[in-house]
Structures are given as C-alpha cells and as structure tokens.
Length: 509
Image (cartoon, one colour):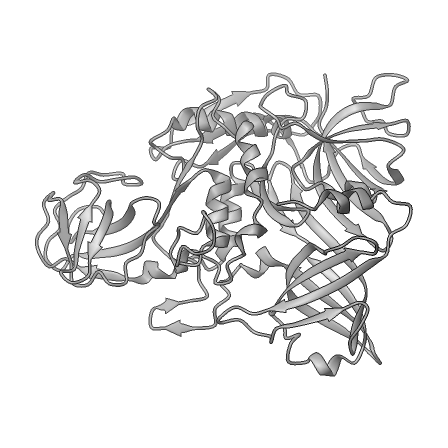
C-alpha cells in the first residue's frame, strides 16, 4: 500500500487544507472505547497534527519511532472514556478538494496536557507500544503481555525416546508453531546437553508429536541424545522467513490465519493488536531483497528461535535486527522494511534512488555536521559471526583519513542465519552493506524541505544537489552535485506544508 497518486500530487500544491480524523480503536484486551474525533465537527475538534517518522542511527542501526501529536480544542470530558492512556489510535487526513482520506499515523496515547478547552495529545509510535503485547491478562507462569509467552509451556516425556519418528509426552495441547514450517521442541535430558527437535504435527488425544526429523535441528550445538521418562520438553518459538516477511508475520498474525498471507504465527508470537494486512506494504518491503542479500546474490533468510518470552517485545526483536543493519519503518501510510546500504556503491549493494533533493526543495538548511557525533571512532576492521561455532568473516580498511580509530567491530548473528542457505555469503553481504559506515565518518545534514518529500522514509536512498552545502570530501570550489545519501529521519506537518529530513552522506573518494 501507499498513498494514492492524487494525494501525493496534492502535497506539491501551493496551498492545502487538511481535515483530520482520529480514530480510537480497541483490541480484545486493550483499553479505551472506540470513537472518532474530527477537525470539522464534534464537541472536541482537532486543530493541527504533526507526524514524526522513524529515526535510525548509522553504525549502531538503532531505531526510534516518533509517533504523532494532535492538538484539540473543545470539551475533553466527553471523551474521557475513549482517550485513556494506552489506547491505540489511527490518524487520518483528507485534503480539501480530494475524495477519501489517507492514513498518516498510528500510535498509542502516552500523554495529554492542557486546560480551558485547549489540549495536546502525544501518541507514541505503535512499535514502541509493542514493547509489550497489547494484552492485560496473566495466567500462572504465562504472562500474556510478553512476546512468545507460550515458551513457558513444557511437558514431560512419557515413553523413552531414542530417535523414533514420534515423541510421546504428558500433554501436547498448548504447544504452538507457525503454520508455514515445522515447530521447535527444546529438549532437556536428565544427563547430557539440551538440544532441539523439530515437529510437524501433534495429536492432542494421544499426546504425540510427529517429528520433522529424527536428528537434532538448528540451533542445536550437539547431537540429539536419549530422552528418558520425566525429562522436560519445552515449547520453543521459531520463525523462518526473509527479514521483511519475519516482521510482517509478527505484526499481522492473529493466531487464526485470517489476516492476510503473513498471518501464519500463533497468537503468542504476535503483538496482541494485529495490524490489518493492509498496514504492511508487502510489495515495497520485498524490494529490499534487491540489496539485502548474500554476497553471491543468492537467497537471504533467517531461522530465528527463542526459548524464553521477551520482556521487551518487538523492541527486543528490533535490537536483534540492528546487528545486521536492518529495521522496520513507516512509509506514507504503511509499515515496511529497510536495511542500511552503501550510497556510494563502493562496498555493498544499494537500492534505487527514491528522490533528488535540490535547492528548489530546500526551505532551510538547519545544520550540517561534517562528522556525525554519533560515531566516536572509525574502525579498521568490520566482521560478522555467521554460525553457531563462532566463525567470522572480516573486511579490513588499510588506511584511515580520520582519528580516533578503533580496532575491530565484530557483530554476532550466527544464531539466526538460516543454516539451509549460505551463512557465510549472507554474513558477507551484511558486513559489506555496513562497511562504509564502520570505516569512515559521514556528514549529517538536517534540512527543512517541501512537503512533497514526505513520501520518503528512513532507509531510502536520495541524491542531493545544493549550491550551499559542502563537506570535507567536496572538491575545491565545488558544492553538492547529486551526492548520494541515505535518509536517517523524517517528519512532517501538513498544516505548515513542511517536511524535516535528516540525511547521512558518506565520503566519495
């Protein structure tokens, strides 16, 4: 999904009149009663709104989501049962003269302040809300607010297992798995090291698992041993997918398979507030396969597993994604996927150019940091650990043009690469996409530009031409001419018809 072409064209108009609608929606175990609040009618009306997009920090690849802020006038008390802290809301806008409205934000209410009929409400982004599942229940050892809460489930072996095609336990009823591939059992024998078995199906009447293999499966580091009666078998979580599909499955899965093609996960793997399938731009996200790929150009994928619930929810997953320079983001009206890349093309693959920013677009040049302070030192080596034995692949920069320098940065993703693919080649591809941001300082530029550029998102490639911008790598007497860069942050205000963008510009030699 994306904004309609008519809406995008209207962003370039000399004047626009936005008409907002804020829709409070409710999940089964959420808070806040459903309601719609408008900017042109009702006891409480919207005056202005500002959307703050995703921000990504190069080198660390940590991500923050800005959410949105809405200003109201009117009688707040009539909506006190709707606008409760923690409620989920969707912000829409219609531009006068156009039919239909477009979605521009989705978030969770965090703060409301004001008095005498003038109020401001801050909605933090929905992924920050997903630091815990949208679920207020608790039952025994299972905390439904935790992602993968079903990993607390275990059963005891009832018949000794020595490599048979089936495994019998005390109770299979609460074990869960993706409908797209085999599930995982984390087996803890009384003697010997734990290992994993894969299971294809289960019979809750006989409490029997049909195994996908009689051997230990990834991420086991030992061979399968004997399971004796009363040994424990835990319900481990497993998601095997391309990166963009992994994220789409987590945020859209209901446990019922009714929310689009990515709804393949159990309820415990999801957020508790599944986004409608249309809220994830699958077609756009799949475009990342063109540059998030192995160094040999072959298929790239993850085989993720967990044996414990995640206290940090989706945020914990995002921290894991950062290890390989990838992140979810918001583009126009939907979530999508992006990965870091080398805008110069010197080291790794890169996407197509999304926009050319010129002086005609630039309203103000807010700041130019020749050396982004978020990078404390450049590295002489960058490496990736790509398997369970800790083997790494390293790339070296033989000469640095700045100080201070550090030795090696070594990232570990060996637990999560899909072992059925080429782990070394995937790690080389990830390493090379990040290399220029590890080896060199980059220039960080903050600019206010025309609203037409609100179509961009963090992780897009842009080119910049300006008579007023230089950096340490600009040739004598020259300025920026189609300098390749990556969008690091974006936010916009429809009423002011402005868009604020931060870009990272690595050196060209």
